[in-house]
Image (cartoon, rainbow over all chains, first blue to last red):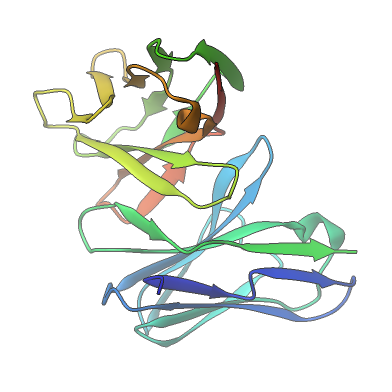
Length: 112
Length: 114
């Protein structure tokens, strides 16, 4: 089983719908991140969390919210999805002080 | 703020040849880390190699080496003896400012030709 698990792996939805992407990890890492990947733009940071009570905005947080339900769980929500949120979303974890990221397999979201 | 620049959107290399993927970075921090990740067509992100800003030697991992030139702020990835399985997107990334966030470049798509 993967150490960092994302669900769903693929999702097609309509404009205006609320969507939640979930991430769980068994690595025991404190730090968790959500990135989105768009062709030609690389990976951009949406939100990150260093523990359950510490949530931080990344460079593109508008239109997104997150919840850190436990050390092992970090969810990303799109309250009202729009087509330009169509992207590949990655959850990642890291060990404090190293910067190395451990990625989930990605969640491909399509908003029609 | 930290920034990563990858100027090669796509590259071709002949099988068994070496290839260099360019990466330049910008940060005002003295302590930082540089990474390369590989993303095959299947989509997963695979860690390849890490270089710390205080490391005096260039990092190597098997056929991968990181050509770290601190004064030029470059961290190029060198892949020796390219294989067909090396065809993928490659991302350069960095962390600085207390190693809290990782910033990625836009990536280089490498295609290995038989």
